Image (tube, rainbow over all chains, first blue to last red; front, top):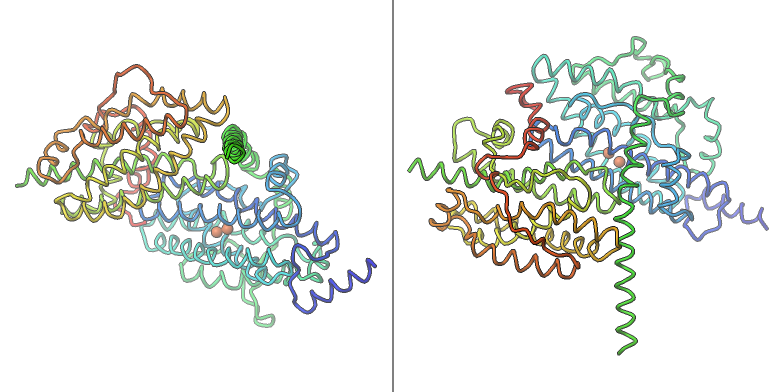
Length: 316
Length: 253
Ligand SMILES: [Fe+2]
Ligand SMILES: [Fe+2]
């Protein structure tokens, strides 16, 4: 019986038919997706913090409004994704509990500090840019609610990417101090950004299964290469130098070669030892704990209202 | 003539600074709200407030002429030149203070727009027409939260009553007219603050009653923001907000 179901399931996937919440699915498929989508949702809301750090200090009113709206978009992405993940049988509160306890992960990139205004440009350009590379294929991922959430998310991410690039462009056209600020931001965000695609393919144990289930459509290394290839040209246009002395065009491969990623650092950050892991997690936990009385009151009030309405119905 | 223009600029800046400073305060919440949906809702309000402030700063900059811009208005005036009321610069403290501060302002802001829709100044009239749609929603949102938290749990009731007690003394300043407000009202440009005060009081009482909250007995009211006599908070707000413009004069961003 189980085997038959699994065959039907794989058959649907092979035919590009979306899997929906009520459909039968292997437990491991459900778990893999739940982990991936909730991680993705956590990344959106933790990702609000490094950029949120600059809202009150944005250099002019236009930028302030754009940054606020961007960070708000990320909150919206978190909402869509938590809703998609909930269809797999875990509540948002349970997912948040896993985030707060440190059990659930989020994208490591958000464990780096935002030191200057140029970081708002670099994050939009590189981090949202890398996110798009990852996410565009996810619009066709096999699980229906996830794919549909990603369609909405991707539209906004590409807007964020252009906005970030435009911040960088303005800086590189500005004073020497502004140009230096832009280069410094690129120096600090480049390696964490290309690490965002995850470990190399030969060191990524779950990838093959995810590809077979069409949760993933491209490998980590394929996506990373694609990102490097498009970003090099963009950096040139800005007149900025990518901080990698091994970066050069490989005629034979038709791609850029690039230097080795410091995976020790990557795994240290994943393990909780990045420069801001503790602060990011604390900010989320504080927000949640300080908000507890608000959520409790909202629930109590809603219950009171409902009881009142029921009484009125009974009385009538 | 020049003097009338200066008074108008002062008035427009007062209107702008109110929404700007509250927006700046609210923006501190972004990413830290008690629940994701409300983080988004408060940010929406913040975006409206800063959007309105920008329209007003642009108007003030045009009136002022020279190389004034919306940004020079917001980023290059110092504490004593700011004209917002004291309420709006108060610390966020917690969600109870934030909601209460927002509610007091929203009710005032709504009735203010209602008056400014009939302003003899075309530009203010246009801005008010857009703003009133937004503040209609703001009042609804903060009123609902006043009621929900006031009449929620014992804890939330206490927190709300404390916030109300602490912030009440900053509400009277809305209705104590500055020289420019008096002059603008006489000219049919500004709002009649007496009439506004009656409407404000009645709406606030209505909502507080439903929220099972009570107005504190002490009737003493602080004032000073409108004439540049701010609290010590204001220097920090501006230090934060103006840092980039001060550190990199005349740069484009
Ligand atoms: Fe996002
Ligand atoms: Fe984004």
